[in-house]
Image (cartoon, rainbow, N blue to C red):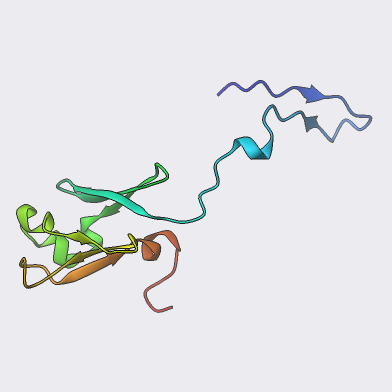
Length: 111
């Protein structure tokens, strides 16, 4: 990978400083995870967020989705706050929900 960072010479040979070609304001730092769209394949639920990120969660992590028919997986609804995917058991064979923050936070199920 090539960058345009230039090495700046210093008095000490053990310390190297580099000019950074872009200011911090040029970088994107997402503040909130909001669902835009959801799609499934044979192995993953792909959660597309409004900021452009795509979070791919293995279906094997979610037994109700892993064991469901593909057509039933598609019968989800996105919650009003756009933070959860919900399957209504009155509308399909799945009774579950996915909270996107659970897959971004890096917490264990026991926390």
